[in-house]
Image (cartoon, rainbow over all chains, first blue to last red; front, side, top):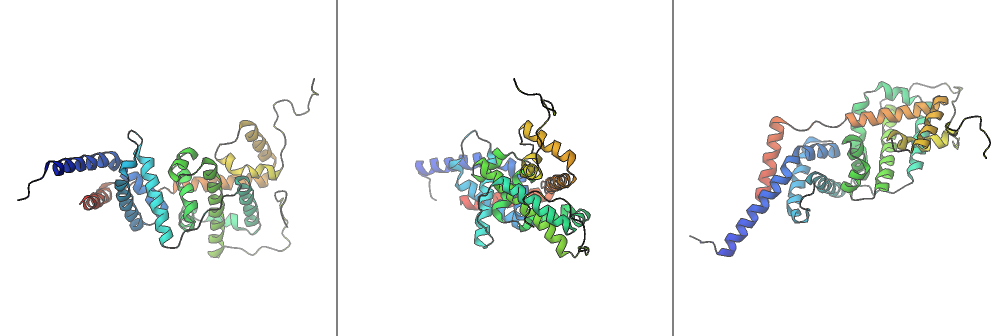
Length: 215
Length: 93
């Protein structure tokens, strides 16, 4: 029978303490991590894989966790990074250009105006918006999905989202505004794809476009 | 001494559609300074087209908030915890 040396015994005790501290600090947040993973992946099985990967990565990086800090945002950060990596591996990752947030707001309004002219806004309002939003979220490029899930779905502040995503608050704002514009575009696309568009008379009177409308 | 204005000292300055919609998402998120917010709201009182855009933005954001999946509970929660614990045990060897 193999007898443990004093150094082995010490290492085993240290590992056990490390494991105990990790589980005590992180397992209470598992349900929230699972919901975040589900929002990111939009798929139950993929979400469970992502939760497992998050906890494995978190254990490997536990020495970097600042004692006394809140473990939930740290786990969210690990989860989001693991999500981005999985999307890169599956070639579904699109890098995020950083644009002018005010221009994103303007573009959102312009797109809405065009959709209104095409009769799409009424049709979107008649659709099940919750179901359409959920589908649109699943089609959103990974970089943008993180920002919109954290702020709009999880209800986090820009500052909290910035900490999870590891980017400045201003970048959260521009990424979030871009994400919302893309989501709006996807909603209108879904309405069009669903064949909801009613033929519009060519002579239909136009309403006022935002100034600068290029038509 | 400044000239008296017809709009009064507390009336927000009029803004056009472009200035209003540039502030769309900051307004929806409640992140505008009070003067800018008042200017947007004064514009929305007189511009039905912008009001529809802003209403749609609010509806979309509300739908996003409502799309949050439920927290796992009961058997699903227990099974996930078990799976994660097993993976952690395997990782530690």
